[in-house]
Length: 363
Image (cartoon, rainbow, N blue to C red; front, side):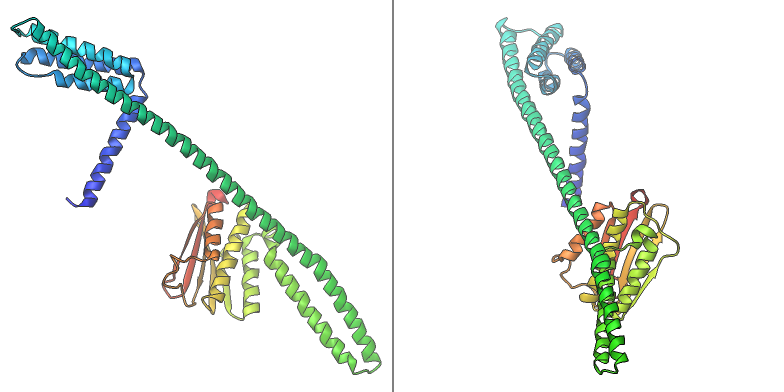
């Protein structure tokens, strides 16, 4: 038998003992005492029928230990006295003869002393066991509360970040974007005035207007990245199609979105987390993997919605599982926040594949 098989057998044995202990813990003290008395009666009858030559006093320890563990010292002492009396009565009824009346008394005293030592040891172990279980329960409750508080704070932090990103996105779109639009219009008016006077500065004004218009487009692109409005308006499919189009336009690579049907997620926070996971995956594929082709794919079933981001880049480094970067940790944490399963690894065709499976119950 190898060490693994021995370890498995020990685990099964420990689990069985734990289940038995929990079963007896649920029973009342009267029930435990009744079982102990029944054990004493059965052992006493066996002691009687086998005669005084066969030593049976040790078997009374089952009832003694059972009572001392689950009921307490006093009940253990009482069962010990009943066991000694039953053992002595069984031997006498079986026809045991002693050279002196002091011999059975001495044997009874020795047996009772032995039982009392066992009672003290078992009761002490039981008390330590219960104290340890109480401490474990308290520690478990404290850890559970601490984890719940940490999750609440992490969720609140992410919500705060998303809220600030939406605010900045709105400010970029509404304030800076409008300001730049006004600047472009003023530049166009200036260009027209200079052109009417046939001044060479008209060409310079035209270039300034073109630069301002590029700044307007860049501002709108940044605003869409910080706050994808389509998530709230039309669902995930248009948002990811727009993201793919922005990536293609900005980085001049192939970025496709495959989603057979419209995909709506009721919780906007869940949709935002999925969108951010896709954004981070694409950013990693371009920045670290130098990918030229990226595919966003949604697959739906009765159980889950699965988002897959696959690229043809250089793939993951050899030590990626030990040195996971901040982006990977954030993606995994976002998936955990929405109850999704997150996985990342090499794609079969080369490159990297990121999978995030969201149960339908969390949509």
